[in-house]
Image 1: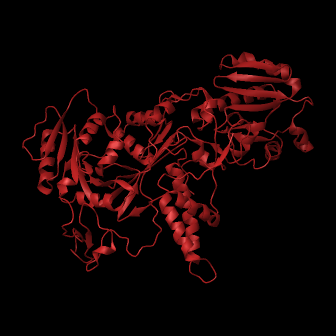
Image 2 (image 1 turned 180 degrees about the vertical axis):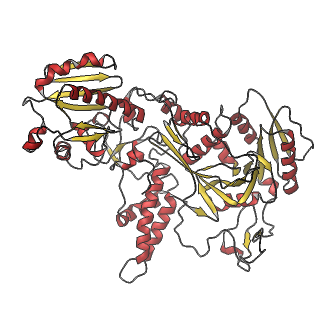
Length: 620
């Protein structure tokens, strides 16, 4: 088995940049990541992972792909170092200022939302009398000019105005409006068509119900009639295939369209920010309720967390992971990452934005662009259930504060073949809960009959590090007093109802409690005692116990000392299960992941620390 050291950056970082990163790592006390090359297993893996194989499209065929969340976490770490270095930059005998600039460039490469580089002019618009060449000229729309804070008082409907220019194509060759009007009535459809035509002569593709009638024969209008055998995802994909412009506007749930909806502004963002492929605006519904519609989304450990808000902005637009509002996007992106056939309603867009985010592309919303919509998206439990099935999620915290927990069977998670799972992935929480439940049965039996036991080996280490089962372990280890062997054998009668059974390995010493998809090793030692003998006399009858997933289980007298002596150097760092690494597990090192973009890949997580697993959405 060979050990390979790899820097796992996106394919957009070229080899020369990787060399720069290697040098900067020494300055910034960066982390080295190691991945173990392992043989493929013949065992099956969870149904959900197989289904997800077709959904993930990594940036490149490079076997080493860094997940979005991992890149962002590293970018934040380097940014902290960069800020500290920047304080000293230029001070005599302190540090060369170029290091701050180089670190800023690396941060921006890892996470383009974090723009730390210092440019002479890096704003969305220029000022009057400023030379055009100072800022990058958009390719498809004219530049903006900021006329000042005192312009157009007091209501400020103008101030950022578009310049007149001649070097751009006609707008009808730039954007096509696709209107998913499947649930609109005829009056709304005709109103929106009139509104758009008053402002733009762009091509329009309207997807309408069969009974809807279009009152006017607009030039450049294509009408697609929805049939019963077509779902939203399928028919929108068909509409996208007919688009011949570089950008597509998707007008979700529109109630009106007026001059406060600047498609030019959205295209300008897509032009100027090359890493951004989707740009949306705010939305106001018919009751007057306004929202910027910017969602942050993160998936980790079989959970998804959505919240409204933003961390970063650029050119007066917010960086988002998902949008609740109409948006414009690169047509090529819409073709490369298509909508999922079989889906309809708001879950279609949650799923699509999750795929866009997972592929590494960025999204913004510009609150100054306001859409008038009939209503804001409402996601019900059945919608989130579909999301759980698509993305193998046990738990979703929705953007409206609701939390949904789904049974594993409902979302396609199976605990079969756990060894195959932990070769690449975290064990799903429902599988861990099952193991912990079996451990509870053992504890209950021991307490009932006053049988002394202690967690040992990996289970003792798990108690110290995780306060429960480690999510890359599928068995458990317990030591007991040999004199209690026969009494433990009577446990078999209780196990029948669980259902589990006892398998004797060495009579009077070593047996396994075998349960579905998990086993628990029970062993005693010849000296017929446990580590309680090392407790002070007044505590010998009070075993050391640790909070193990909500209940106290007995451990070694000094579990930290036991774990350090048993596991050896760097026992607080993590290592894969010995069965997945041929016994050569290296502290802080995970195997390569079979599906590199999946949210539960072990190598998306740091090689040490319990918080990334226990509190995966905690931001430090």
